[in-house]
Amino acid sequence: MTRNILILMAAGGSAVLLGGAFIFQLIGYPPCAMCLWQRWPHAAAIVIGTLALLIPGRVLPIFGAMAAAITGAIGVYHSGVERDWWEGPSSCTGTGGLDGLSGTDLLAIEGPKVVMCDQVSWEFLTLSMASWNALFSFALMVLWFIAASKAAGSSRTA
Image 1 (tube, rainbow, N blue to C red):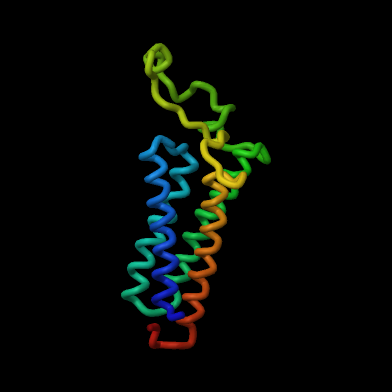
Image 2 (image 1 turned 180 degrees about the vertical axis):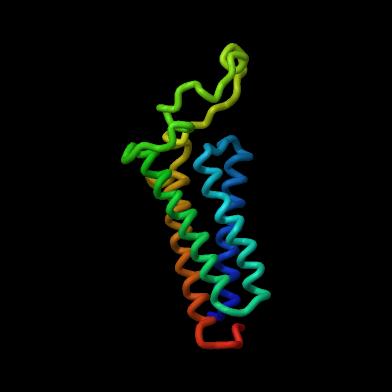
């Protein structure tokens, strides 16, 4: 496979994962704070992929791999928080208390919807969305690194 095909697959994979996250949100699974953290590196990977198709070399594919690794690492961290393997941020877990809510919010019949990071809202084959994001993101990271290796030692990066 050529460098550009690999970049299209890697950046396209991030686009699919990001699109899937928005579809889940549209059908009634609002994201928690950590879910939103996982989206930003995918958005960065899409932009990096677009630039990498226009600019030859291996630097941009390495940045794409870094973006995929970051969202994968956040996914692993989030999965661990969901499974009670370690503590998550108090701002979005059961230990967070009511610090972010005003008195009006607390007294309102329909207060703000608080989505907790330590609760699994959807899973498939015993893996949560965060776990699936981690797995797919690390696979995309490999594609990015292969694309970077295709650019190494060659000035023509087709």
